[in-house]
Amino acid sequence: EGLAKLGELVEWAAGDLSLRVWAPASVEATAMYGPGNPPRSVYVHLVNYDVDLAGKVRESPEIGLRVRIPDGTAPVNVRVQSPDGGEESEPGWNIARPGGHGYAVVRVPRLHIYGRVKVWLAPMTQRPPQGSVRLTAPLSAPAGSVVRLKAEYGSEEQARGAYVYGMADRGLIPGEHHEVRGREVTGQFRVPDAMAGGSLLLLVTQMPADRGPCDYRFLRITPPLTLSLAAPSRIARGMGPVALSATIRNETDRAREVGLALEAPPGWRVEKQGPSVDLGPGETRVVRCIVEPEATAAPGRYPLSARLTYAGGPGDTERVLAASATTEVVDKIPTAKCGRTGAPPTIDGKLNDACWKAAPAIGSFIDIDKRTPSKWPTTVRLLYDETNLYAAFECSESEPATILAQVREDGGEVWQDDSVELFFDPDGDLQRYEQFVANVLGARNRKSPEWQVRTSRNEAGWIVEMSIPLAGIGQPQPGDVWVFDACRTRPARPQAPLEHSSWAPTEGTFHQPAKWGLLVFEE
Image 1 (cartoon, one colour):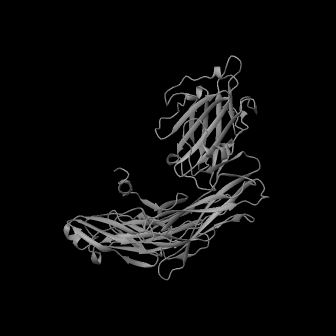
Image 2 (image 1 turned 180 degrees about the vertical axis):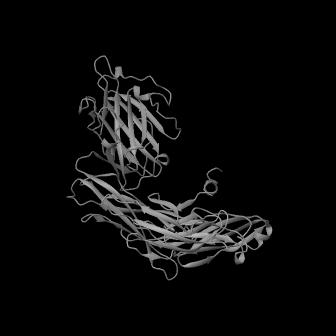
Image 3 (image 1 turned 90 degrees about the vertical axis):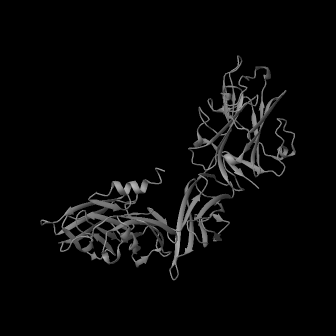
């Protein structure tokens, strides 16, 4: 409830500020009154500090200003001035409330580096409108969407004559479907399709012929569609095709057809290019695209981008959205494969299912403290289907009588026993990851009835077989790449010290995702 009222609370807290600014955080604004008593003008100075690493200034989108004016004065003219080139222009639109606690509201179409807004003032010659009104509206909305508004007036008479309209660079836009209940007016307003993301729409409610008070809200326009691109954080050179995911969401209440194109570095192969996507109202779609780095690509970071095209309003030009991601091509990194199975194994700790015989083995574990090959070899095999990821560990042990197995309940410190671990970082951010640990008794580090573990022992050592639900970590598709590691702990014996071994070349601890390897999901 508190978050739902946040916008209303911000408006209330800022009601008496001498200057309010609707702009990116990189824009600084200061207000200054001109000479005279009362002053004959008010100036607002604007500075844009949005500079990229190359020293290039990024132009600010539209800026909204509300500046308090002295009692007994009324705004008579507004100009936007550019100190850079000495240019002067109309602000597009402005509204004003004269008299006590009066203000001028101005839209600045754009700001490069510096700007100045001048408001000319004149003494009031008539009594200002009386009464009160409070308009409640969202802070932002997508182009083409419907915005619901509420205005509360000081009297029922004022509410009966109230109306709402919008002001944008293309003129006035009327509201629609108003309903009056006592002093409260509710209604809705459709944001024009043609409005560009980042622009401002001023919503105003007031009495006819200026016979009463008015109130306003700036509405920041967002694109009707959103686009994001996800790519593997690292790719091994020569690894083959990998999958990217472009996520598109329709933020409006009507269906849309969009075009999607993927751009990769020169020499890279792009399998899926320019598909047309139909999105229903409010629908989110994930489009998978396959890319393959050039075989001779040098190690380093490479940019990838997605370009979404869609139609604006009637007679409007085609609109474009872009999203980007980067991936790092590395020369040497452990890479394993996880194949899809149509006949999942029975989790019994025996590994006699046909699917395990066809699964490639992942081995060559190293002692992470000594940086040498492990004295006790370990292999792991991985498979997946629509619901689970399956793992089979085979842990060699020359002294089975010394195996340490003390923790019998789930949720305990199972890693202190003879145990194995799996680490998965599906999105490759190297920050958040999933850890699954099981000891030789089948006790697990987390309590989850869906996660199955069974173990067994033989003359060569011991076996751990797992089934891990994908619902909790993410559903992979062929071509997806996860950051991954498989590990084993062999506690100290009278004849041998503690050994932590890992498939990936970590050092001192398993918890080093930047040094883990890659797991490629195959068909």
